[in-house]
Image 1: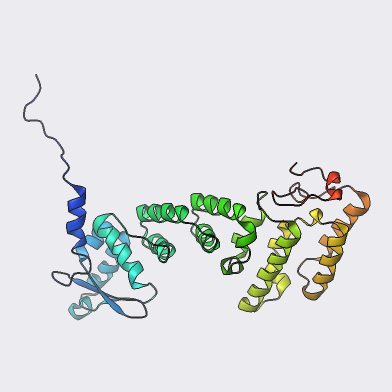
Image 2: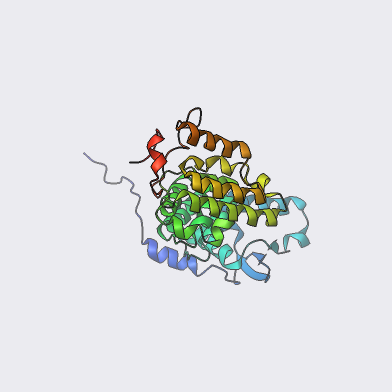
Length: 297
């Protein structure tokens, strides 16, 4: 016989709960903590209890004030000058309601804050949104974030998008602003839809831009990424042009160019990494490619 007095866990309407909680976001009444946010020093009101129990980073932040035992200091607003107000409010919205309103303008910055505050579920929500709204203009910036924050799924999605739109993406500001690690992730792909001489030219542009920004010589900027340029795909005529361009900035070490000339002389790519003679998806077929052992047919 079943127990007529057994307990049960019942759930009410999440929508109405979230709506009620949303009313508390940035509401001065009954708030007990203030933040001064962004360069514009926007005041954001909140409730310590909610933030502390939803986020360990806030719990630690508030605990440090308690330990000071200074009543006046406890009333001083927290200054968060390195985050935009709309980004911080998105984080607060998530903490209060477990929901968040994202847009292309703030999604990457909200992801950054989610990482900083250790909010795994918010990270997942940001990644899902970013993956579904990639554009030619945003793909490289998203890839950079994925590499920086080790978001494997997001990195794969970005790379797939970049592979399908390579010719447009290499012309964007985001491409020029990639770190060498993020650019390496692109250059290691077999599926880029661009011919190798064009890709080399855009990598040269990237190196020159970063040389100015970082105040370092072009060869030093490019020393890691040029190892992924597939010089063996170039015809002798294209290699001659590359060699002439290279004299202006020393982008590519001469021993790498000499290695390709040796291949053209012997018609045998021996002793090199297996992927370097392999055609990418967008590589235009050349006569000498029949001597390469590894290429897409």
